[in-house]
Image (cartoon, rainbow, N blue to C red; front, side, top):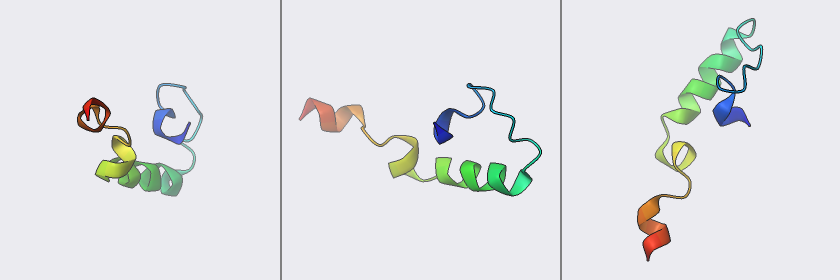
Length: 42
């Protein structure tokens, strides 16, 4: 759920540190795409 907080319209704007933390996670390849298509094709 944390990866889709904006799409789910979770009211996290009042918590800038949480938003910054979640945005930081999305910069990690393993977090932003945990099941890449390349691995599924193997």
